Length: 174
Image (cartoon, rainbow, N blue to C red; front, side, top):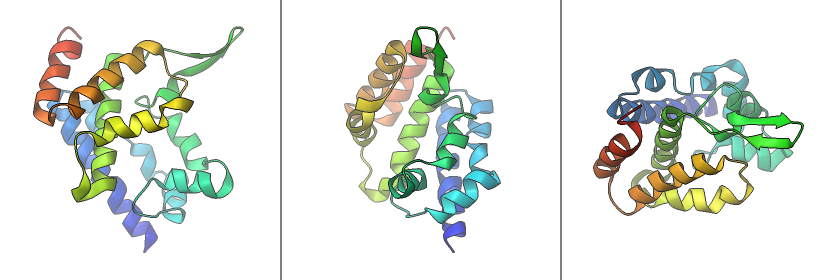
């Protein structure tokens, strides 16, 4: 039963992200978004730690101290800032994300909040969540600035206006 519920949740999330990506003209990214969640590694672990109101990865992390599904996921999905972390002789560095992946990350965060908050969703929620969790991020300064700008615009506006803003400001010459 948890496997079916988890499958429904990730499929709903994927559908929301796909619709948002399509509005930005990111058709290939919308179609390919989070396909690794359907892999055996992520699907079974996600079902095991499924709660319905938050990410199974968070629940797995809370339960055993890390998330094996997340370790698998972040290395296969370029819309996560964690994908863009590298080690150099200077230590850990955060590489600037290409703008199309920052936009997909925006779509991912909005869609995840919509799925987990359901009817309680509001346009401030993705920005509030980002601010709540941001303290431990190792994210490129420019990537962070751009994502914050997008989420803040959504928090102070609505989805249609924010999409037009992002298209004009960030994707126009891309």
